[in-house]
Amino acid sequence: LGGIGKPAAFLGWLFGAYAHEKLLEGVELPMKGLNAQAIATWFKLDKTAGNYTKFKMADMERVFEDAYRQPDSSTLRSVDAYYMSNSGVLWLFQMTRDINHKINVEGLLELLEKFNKLQDTENVNLIFVVPMDVAPHFPAQEYKLLDVFRPDLSDADVERLDCTCIPGIQGAKKRKLNDAGISTIGDVMAAKKNSPSQVSFIRSILTDFKANRERNKNRQKVLELKQYCISLDYGPRDVARDGNV
Image (tube, rainbow, N blue to C red; front, side):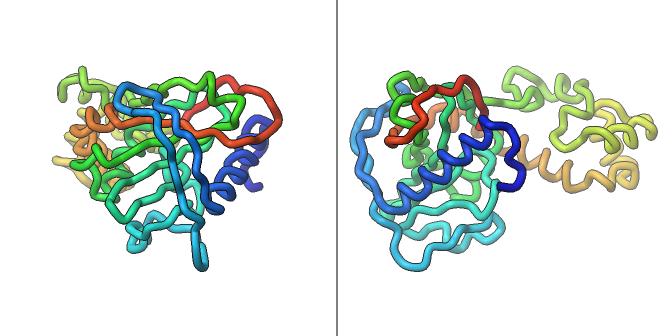
């Protein structure tokens, strides 16, 4: 139970573990459509056969297996598990006890890129797996988008933002940049071009930032993904209030 401290987080972990076990056993359940794109139907998942192993995001050669798959640890930023059917339909699962569970857009874009699904989002479905008493109240979920990736910001607007708006730049990294006279994203980009040694210690962060900005050009496709909800008979019978993917 490493890293689980608060009661709500612990209860969420328990439900997530229970939900993974149920899906591994195979299920056939009614599926509630949460947004206009999703039509209520039934969801069937066969029992996972053979020697089941968790996957690592760095080791994706088994990604297209026709089997329910769960990450080795919390390496998926937007979902808890996935199932890729033989017909190429990708089902993404998020287990939650929360009524509000915002969707991490950047994490979802990164995942869809790994699955080669950024240009095939019609065949991608996002399923929220919730306790039975939560399902009747469960709405379509909102999307969580970092300010630096907001579509209304121009390149000039982004360059004026503080350097801490780049994911991964905080604390000691920010202080080191500030000591070098670098305070905005524009300053960071100028240093990267003209004095790369000044920002060499955040090279991987800047590589990820550049990739995220490029992926975010496809954000609208993610915002239009079909959202569904399936419910499992699980206690205790209470409804959590808030959460985030």
